[in-house]
Image (cartoon, rainbow over all chains, first blue to last red; front, side, top):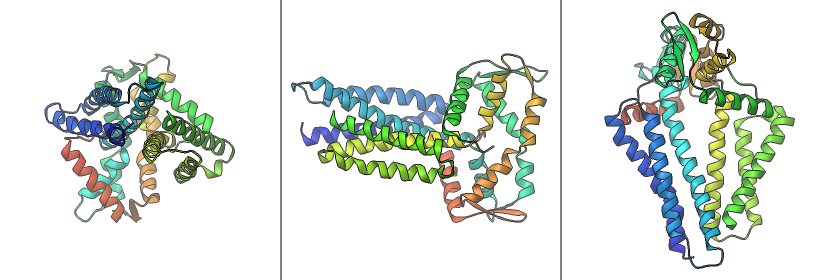
Length: 177
Length: 158
């Protein structure tokens, strides 16, 4: 296999992630507060493109050429998956992370200093709950009625929580609350 | 094919060593240790005869796996209020839970206090009673996040 075509295969996931970032940036102008959906859809399209292009660029006519082509596809899927996951996490942290929110609050103050009481008052645990409930309701994960009773509507996140708990038990990790 | 096999071998070795240390040597549990394991395991790539492009391809895939896991590990280490919230509702097996009960769970353990402690511990801000002040590192991260939010029209929901 030529060096140039192998270089091209290695470059494919990076070209695709640039497309995802550009697509997200453009779509975020028109579709408000749907970052997760945009990134997931763009990533799926990017993955299809990476697989097709890798398949086309892989060497043909060799013994077990299909196996080589498949291995390039797997490697590129792993690389592109890692890039997408990293990008998704950076955006997700900006939307949901308490720590990032606290950093931003301190950053917005004139001398980058905020009294502890102000941080506590601006961001009370009840406000945390209210924001999380609003977001989970928007995602159709839970339902809260007017009397303030909440139930789980969908199971995906519950499965994720169970998986995380199992891994924590397996690895002896005690989470920071 | 060889590049893929090397990546599978390295990733497998990384997870094996990580699991053994985490299960049997609790005192070494840290993100820094994960990074050390990642780098030490990568040295094993020297055992294989690869062209420089195969070497690069394997390395990219291996580090993709490791860094993705490192991000996931942060989820394992920190208890997200959203996931804790889902966990509490899931334990109810379909029985409704009142907002007051949920609130009480969080008020007992204020998540802000814990997060501020972590920010100080990781050098993003310093506590000068009664104020919290951003360090240089914290200012860089906060500026980056603010610019990213502006660029992508991100509204805070956390």
